[in-house]
Amino acid sequence: MKNLIQTSICTILAITCLLCLTACGNSVKGEGLWENATYLKDSSFGDGETSLTVEVKAGEQSVKFTVNTNEKTVGAALLEHKLIEGDEGPYGLYIKKVNGITADYDIDKAYWAFYVNEDYASKGIDQTTIEKDKTYRLEYTK
Image 1 (cartoon, rainbow, N blue to C red):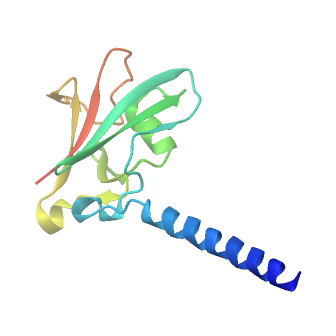
Image 2: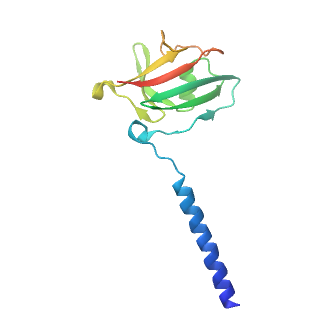
Image 3: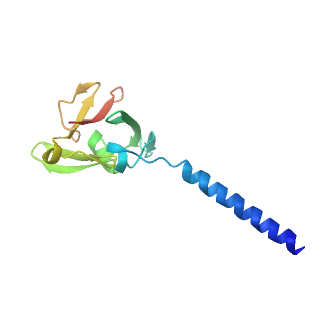
């Protein structure tokens, strides 16, 4: 009886270790520009009445965020879910970080370009009203 209990405990421990190793092996770690990224896969946020999708592109990688919000502007919707960070300037929000990825023009001349329907945006992200059939993209540019 004692051997059966010991064998059972060892089997359970072995299976637990195997599951832990498998889970660790499946974790994805970003590299290069994506090393500090918060999300590496397409993700959805919020439960508001308005929906928008924003592609975040840096280097050869990209992710898409679908945001459901009650906010009126793209900037407010992304700020609501902490997907962007920046500083207020004379022309509105100057984006410095998107999805945990920093672009600092003062250090390496990198910045976040904002596109609406594949065209460079004519307004800042915090002044761009969310529109149903528009596509939005933030692209790390250097």
